[in-house]
Structure formats: C-alpha cells, structure tokens
Length: 397
Image (cartoon, rainbow, N blue to C red; front, top):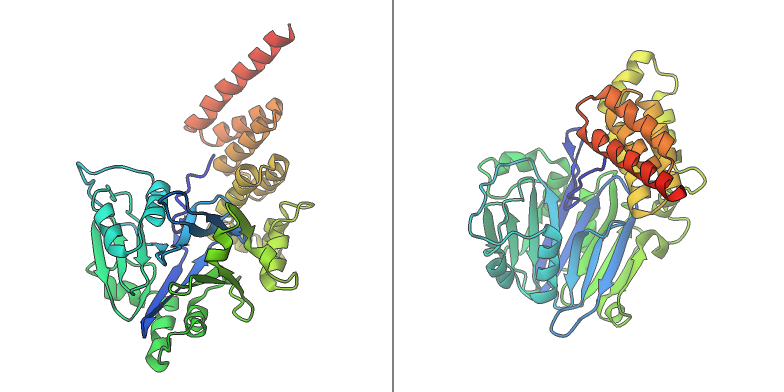
C-alpha cells in the first residue's frame, strides 16, 4: 500500500521519531546555520532553481523525491524543519490552505527576511503541523519558529532547534530527553563560539546520530553551503550558490560529489545496488538474525521496524527510481521476512500491477485481502485490474 509520506521532517518509524538538529549562530555580523538531516535513505540530493523575473534563486536539499527538507535562497534566507511528538492543532478557519511544498517554495522564492515570512504564514492555515516544526533564519541572525498554532520570532546569538515544540509547556523536559540535542548544548557550555563554519560543523558533529545522512552548513553572508556526507566530518564539499544558480536548473546526487572511498558513498552504493536491490535489507536481516533463537528472531521482527523499511525502500525504487523490477525484488524479500504482513503484499501487488503482470498482481492483492479483509485499497485495485484485463481482451478481438 502506498506510503503517505509528509517527509517534511521525517515520519515515525517503530514509534520513534527520526531526529534532526539545527544550530544557528550570529557572531560579529556573520550568521551561519548548520543542519543534520537524519533518515533511513542515503539518496540525498541538492537541486537549484534559478532566479526568474522577480523571484529569488534557491538551493534546496532533500532526498530523491525532491521534497524540500532544507533550503537557502540567494538573499541568505534559510529553512529547515523537524519531526516532533504529535500535538493536536485547531484548524485555523478563514485562512488559506496550501500544500506544504507550495508554502516552502513560495517563501524561499519571494522573501529575504523572517519578518516577511511571518507576515505571509499568518495568512496560511498551518494546522497541518501537528507533528513538526519549521524554522527560518535570515542573515541578520533573526529566526522564526513555526508551529501549527504559533509563529515565534527570536534573535539569540546561538540557538539549537531539534525534535521538540518550543512553545509547549513541557519543552524543557522534552529537550532533556533528546541526547543528541543535549550533546550540542553541553558542547556550547565549554566551547566559545567563534563564528566560523568550522565551529558550526563541530557542533553538528556532536549532535549527529547513526542515521545522519548529510549535514549542511549555510554561510548566510557568503552565500555558500558546505556539505558533509553520512556523518563524516573530515570531508566536505562547498557549494557557491551564486555560481550554481548561473548554471540554470540542475541537481546533484550528494554521494556523487564525494570520493568513491568515502563511507557515505560506499553505503549509498550498497543501498542502491542494481544487481541486488534487496541486498541492503538482506544484510540487515542476516546480521540481526544469524545464530539467534526463534524467539529472538520474532522479537527482532516485531520491534525493528524492518517491515516499514522494506516497504519504504520498495516504494523508493518504484516511485522515485522508476525501477519496478527492483521494487518487486525488494517487496518479495520483505514478504518472505513478514509473511503475515497484509500491507507488504498489497505493495507487492501494486508493483506487479504497474509491471502489467496481472496474474501476480491479483495473487498478491488476494493474499493481502486474506490477511486483512478490510483492505479496501486491494478491493478497488482488483476491480481496476479486472477492467484493464477486459479492455485488453476487447482490443484483441
């Protein structure tokens, strides 16, 4: 079944929110912002949308689906966001409803400071932000924190935002629960910020986790973006925004910007092996189950989130990489690991349907329905498959 992803700042996997941290510092008139992007996939990209008429040129960072996870425009306005615990937000009647992608793109191409952003967002119904926070920073050092029910300006010289709601009553307790956030706070207590990109990257290093796929350090005054791959802070690539925007609309896969021997590149190639699309999943399964008892394996299956991961990677291959045969191999292996997972069989059925293998699609959707008779999606798709087969027969006759 298709994953409905608001990968705005990552979803919940195995009941644990993927973390993300952002450090902003302003020193002697220079503002630098660092961000760790933490996710399961190494398919990170940076893409550029040049200035058009009165619109600003923008560099976006994110993943293969091109959903903006972060950005900087040519005026030095920076954006990023964070997953947070679910918090109910009242719908803001009378305000404009827009998809979050459109909101971000409009802000980044039209505004140069956070007060303009605040005025604009005040007209937008932001009640969809029930489990995420957005942050904007301009080169004066002022920043805007955006929650579903609050727009808050700040101008502290040094500020760290992570996976918590800044206006929540329990914010101090929530912060202390985030080890990576506290690592950054404790680092700042014993190290005096000096306003350099090197200091900013040191803070991000302290806050990285095992799934930090890339780190971006934005120099808002110079207009540069320094990229680090897969929490390797010994190697980086610097992007000059002005020079890249001159090249027109284009994009880079981040792994292709680094040496082939870099740890992040090695992981990227393993994850995207065209000869064995399910190889990454297989390696996790083998590592975690080899020599284990049946009880231990069952416990791993139920707590690891591997079924979700298999479904996510399968859709990444099918939807974003446009490789349905690779997706079939991934979904097939996932159903072998989880033979009672109706959702995985639904996904495998969809892959076969897209591949026009109707018999296999029917068989897998049927298996999904057997496991979950309430799967309305499978019923609807089976009807469509039946209609496609009938149309094919009519054309043949």
